[in-house]
Length: 160
Image (cartoon, rainbow, N blue to C red; front, top):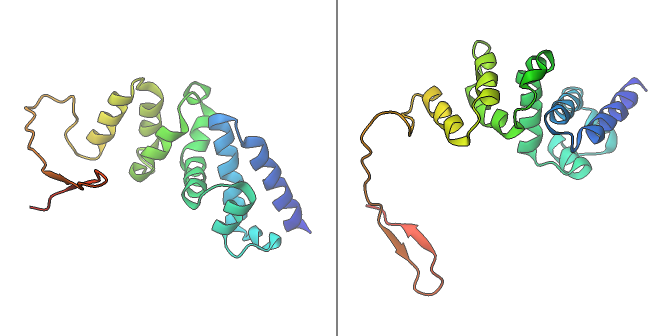
């Protein structure tokens, strides 16, 4: 009985979180995490967690796991500091491969405080150890040869 109450509560949280932006995504992620960890999806006859989120809530597998990760890694920090709650969820999802226990606060601040998309992308490139497009360097472009289908126009890169 206790698991049924938990599943019902989690499903209400998910429904309430839809369309609520960042805080809604955190709410949904926490609830999905509870459902996945407790295998509560079995109660509705789903064959897997992925089938449950797809059939019950219309989320893809990757969307569900991304929301769970955002809630797990960034949720507590976002709930502590309302000034960071303006960040777009997609930025946090972009940062998930870079998250460690030591840098998650810095990553969250980057996502919230870098206003333009290009600056944010350059910051991600820097954190990955790549040269950012705005760093001082000489751009060296090389032509990439393509071939196109004469019937439909489909293009593909020529292997050299």
